[in-house]
Structures are given as C-alpha cells and as structure tokens.
Length: 86
Image (tube, rainbow, N blue to C red; front, side, top):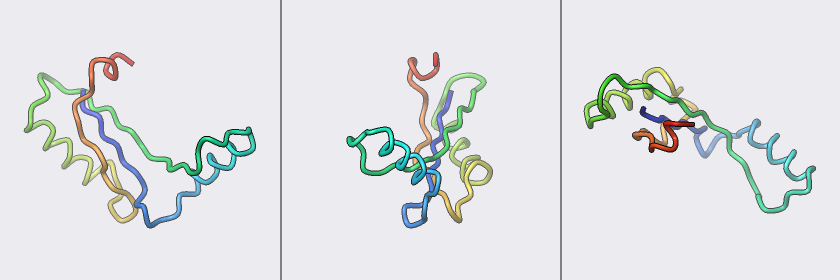
C-alpha cells in the first residue's frame, strides 16, 4: 500500500484547522497551539511497491488527488506494516 498525504499550502487559511484548534481550546487542551487539516489517501498496489510505483503514485497525487493551486503533496511513501493493517 502507498500512502499519499496532502495538506493546504502553508500561506493559505485553513478554516477546518482553525475550527479544530478552537474546539481543542474549548475542551481545555492547552498542549497544542495550532492545527492544520489535510487528506490521506491509501492506494492499494498490485504487486510490490517499487520506485516506479511510487513515482506513478506521486504523478497521480499531483494530477488527481491534490488541487495544486491550494494544496501541496507532502508525502508519497510505502505504508509500514502497522499502517497497512489499520
């Protein structure tokens, strides 16, 4: 399995992150001073995860999974055994 993580560009407002941060504050949590909310995609792979598969996953992420005007693809990687079982 390949994991792709997409986040809003740092220079853009993240209203969903602000809402979560506000909720944490209202619940009494003071350990966190900010939240950014992104997306995680799990791509199930036929066969082994090779460098070519990861490159194809990055291309898919940049053309389909992320809106590159407002988001960055921050990670394309093979899932660990623990992540694959979750």
